[in-house]
Length: 115
Image (cartoon, rainbow, N blue to C red; front, side):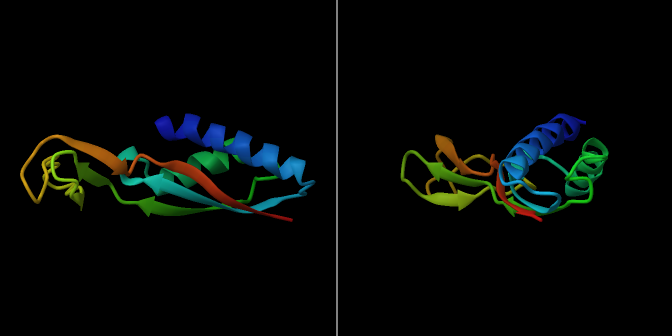
């Protein structure tokens, strides 16, 4: 259900930028969404359709690019992709559990297509 509040915030951003550029409609919104966000693309579109109804973004389509979760080992600097099946937060090179998240938490409006 957190998709609703997030999509409301996205709509606010999109409308603010669209109005700044004197748009009459928003056609497409390109988003980058980190794998760790656990946002579901179908629900994102449904909630966006709900909150954007009767606005200039009312018929906009979301294009969602999933950004993989990448971790970096603080012990050996090795970067690796998180295995979501095992959820192992240990370095695949040296076995250290002292790791940091490099990517995978993003939520970015990459571009907006307007008319």
